Image: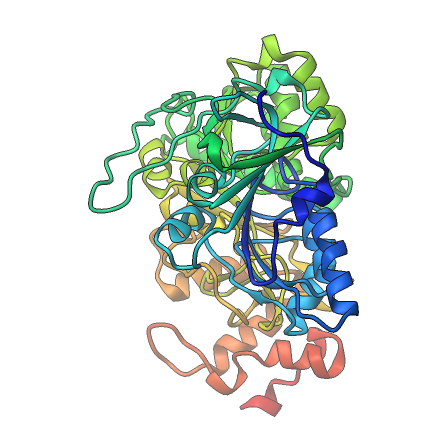
Length: 497
């Protein structure tokens, strides 16, 4: 290896107040786990002395509790981008304690390169191997590792033996040039490889290697239930019907799917539907469900940024690497989420909404318009550029007190111009080729819960005429009713006319 072995505490001592640090990983997969808790310990000590200590954190996506959780609880994060899922971090953001910049994941690496977020002082990369000439073999995710490793003044390596060296070779590391020198990204099918299996780091910048054995802080998701199963079946039935009528080629198209129990239900239904041929994935994360489908031969190839799987599933991949090596590839996030490639390949995107309005605008980030949930993630990268863009969600939440179908979304992440299909357990609204009022009819009749159909039609009736009818004083009345009465069904439209 050739580099100095240092402790996590010694590595953390290089991080100073005000630093920008870049981290490898994408979701908790592949993120540092030993140095960041030691940074938190330093922050606590400095705070106890009355000294300021806060840092800015730049990553590929979310991390684990060892970064976002610990550091947010002790108020050691000043700025963070581009995405997170940690509940303590979320609380701090919504309390105004952290400057959180919610960014499309495909844009994160390039915005760092463009200098939009300042310099990168230190990069911390998790690796399964590092060579004396600076070849760093990443673990379970690509993220923005190539960019932060190149730009950082100093680099720290966490050499994690919890990840098998069998991971070597699963990555395809490629960093595009910046304008005006950028060329096309030459990926023409999900299995194409265009880069190297490692991140090249200037060996003079590596200040030390921290040896650890810590598995990823893998998240488990709730088990499928009748609602998510119905949503999954609705997605599978819709895609099968579109293929049967020739909208989707008979050979099918690559899929992108988000994270969570709905995504797992969708993939399960697609796997069971034998009218749909074995297909490929071009996506940002792969979950256990995809790995199972690869084993079954239902998924032919998976291109991803991150193996966001349980530790047992990940170990199974490492143990069966001879089987998986020609069926998986991990890429940096600006490649896995590249709009250019998504549009070229004809990716079908399937993402989850918090709410959708009657015209097809989607909110995927904010509860009641103000409280951040997680972030836009990669959903925008895929939605605008997809062959077919699909959003799924249950029609109601909180035992029916909240409708996911509303007159106007309280925060808009994806406009009606980009959303093709809305699917709930109630049914499918195909918005393609429809005017606003035709979209409203499809969404209310096919996707809204029966408790809310008449409520939504009453809103349409009271709206002023126009291309997109609205009653502006009442547009967010269902959200207002929820805040005042705790149940959207208790709305009295007369109060808002």
